[in-house]
Image (cartoon, rainbow, N blue to C red):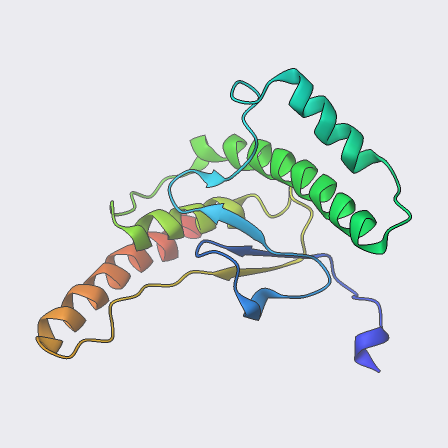
Length: 165
């Protein structure tokens, strides 16, 4: 019954660690780069003919269900990445906390930017996926665990303080 019910909230999901099954739903998750955030086509690296071809492919309705679905998702992803990046870049100057220069610190900085821009992104409920590997230690467990937990702790310190500032 709930599966057929329309969502009462506008939702968005983001992953800083690639495509993850936990984020699967009606709309694909936004995959973000831990350092640069939103990944998008760079017009300076793609010639205008290729951009025109992509626009042509994604604007047409196809008689093929697969083709129509792929074209629609590609079109949606390109529009979403452009919008998300412009909004996320606008909040860059509002960031007040320093995040550590670690993978976890970079990822949580990107999440903090998205949290700060949730009103402009018009999402009422967001989901974020961030992972850290290296916990499967078979020797030097204490040192490995201490290093990983220290990385998480330092990154979370900036993340927790960012919305408060």
